[in-house]
Amino acid sequence: MNSPVPKQYLPLCGRPVILHTLDVFDTMPGCVHIVIATDDRETLMPMLADAALSTPVTVVQGGALRQDSVANALAAVEEADSVVLVHDAARPCVRAADVQAVAEAVAEYGAALLALPARDTLKEVRGGLVQGTIDRSVVWQAQTPQGARASLLRRAFAQVNARRQVTDDVALIEALGEAVHVVQGSAGNLKITAPEDIPLAEAILRSEGRGACG
Image (cartoon, rainbow, N blue to C red; front, side, top):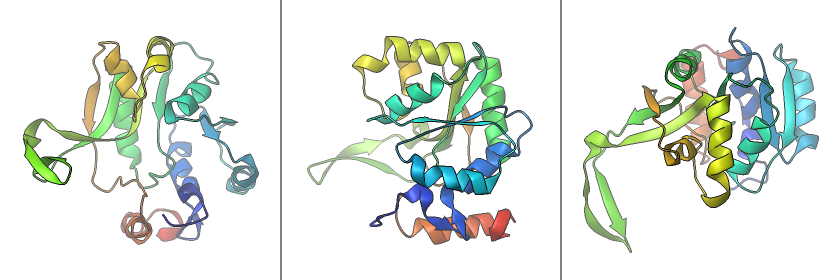
């Protein structure tokens, strides 16, 4: 982002990115507990106080890797077989209907993720040279939320986490040989990564009449 401020705290329609993200889950009737993993309580806690969320929130210590942060958050979930969804704070444009669809898929199948079919032709590139063309019909771009029953997610972390570094959460479940159901998401569920993503996210939120962007 070329910014001294972490992307989840950047202003988006006058509010920090993370608060737009939390709003989606806070307004869902099925959401009974929000757990946030962070290394920056001093910045986050005043934001949460101003947000006055109706859903109980627990803040835990972030880890060195993404999967370490998720493991810390999972430890704060007391229910043995609840539906647990893991979501990126920097995805504020996710739609509540898509979150609900993932939760329902987890409840039915045990594990699920939001993903989008690849639209462009995909090339395998090494050293700046094209090595081949990948069949895009079998390629999906992973999004969040991703989720599983708490018991399955705990088993994945217990058996796989220590020996495999992953970039998303269901990869640990895949490593167990368990099936992961795919729920088709939306191109609007962008992950804020570069400066130009902020005005794009604002345009998406404004088009949906959400919050201060409406």
